[in-house]
Image (spheres, rainbow, N blue to C red):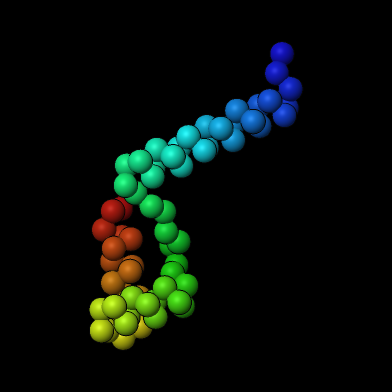
Length: 65
C-alpha cells in the first residue's frame, strides 16, 4: 500500500519527466501574457513598437491553437 507521500513523489517524478521531454524535443513553455520586459525586448529586436510586439506575440501563441 502506498502512502500519500509516495503518490505525490510519483506524480512529481512524472511531471519532471514531462518537463525533461519537452526540453529534449527543443520546446519551451512561455507565459500566455508576456511581461513588460519581454515586450520591450521584442520591440527592440524587431525595431517595432511595443504594441506591435504584443500583436506578434499573440499571433505566435494563437498560431499553434
